[in-house]
Image 1 (tube, rainbow, N blue to C red):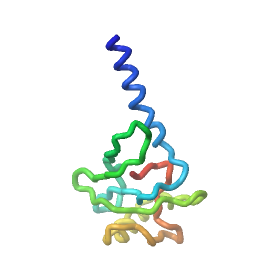
Image 2 (cartoon, one colour; image 1 turned 90 degrees about the horizontal axis):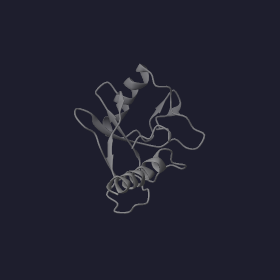
Image 3 (cartoon, rainbow, N blue to C red; image 1 turned 90 degrees about the vertical axis):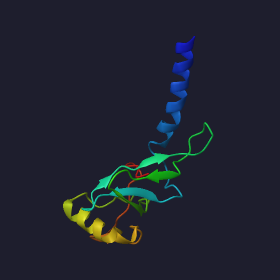
Length: 120
């Protein structure tokens, strides 16, 4: 009986994570990037304070360790972020000194975060 109950609880707790895996439209909150001093990105640690069992996007995203938290725009439908290269990392490090990548371009493309990558 206990094993069935535990299996049911684990199955229900996985449903919101699956629902958040690929959002269909950009969330209303900006994407959170964690950048090292060179501009390389690392995944943020995100939590939801909602007490609901329904899927909801994370509302608190933090960067662990030496990484700097930067807000970035989500890519619009059909838009792709610039290719991830060392030159982009350097440009991102320079552009993010104000704590945001909103309005910043790299080779004519906005420095946005793809919905599939899930930038927090």
